[in-house]
Image 1 (cartoon, rainbow, N blue to C red):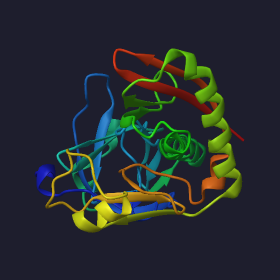
Image 2: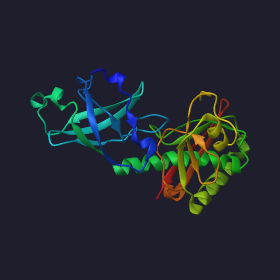
Image 3: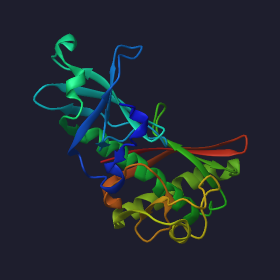
Image 4: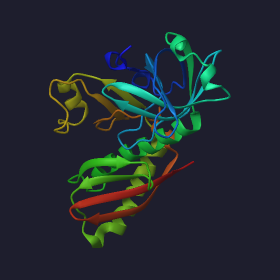
Length: 258
């Protein structure tokens, strides 16, 4: 079977709170360089690394095996689950006969929730940048790893304003968190996505596409493929540790608390 002929259905796209499901096994790869194996399924609830968000981890299993998922990647619409078989003799496992079996998928809940809180906090800071008079800065990317979470913007802030804007940003973010608000996710036609995002979308999104839009409360939305909290209040709290401007870009570093 050619795995590239079967795009993986991304269940987390529709239900970000889903941590358990079942799926049909389609393909096993030989060992990769570090000794791990790769598993491909018809569908998955595991979020792959991407968009600045680390991958989910967890377990895929049935009565014949228990596969520990250590990393997940998306390539050409196929999700690759990297890991190893726990307490199993690989030689005794007939991988060919496992194809077509149904397996249970279980995502590590604590890791998913932390990643969702960090990812949501990054979007919340984007919203708050407009509220504190830095709406002229254009969001370019956000990362949760490996050096800690930050969001980056095209444009600069005067050096003598950085500390004040840092305080204002943290205050505004925590004010929105305390107020709460449902987080909506929808896949919609391009024109409708533009409306949800305040009138425009980034240039990299094709006009014939149907983007996935995340909207936090009544604030303008943004295109995103990651996982998020169900309500803004679930972020907990945000500490803005630093705002740094250098070479035409501004980085906002932050952490989330309980």
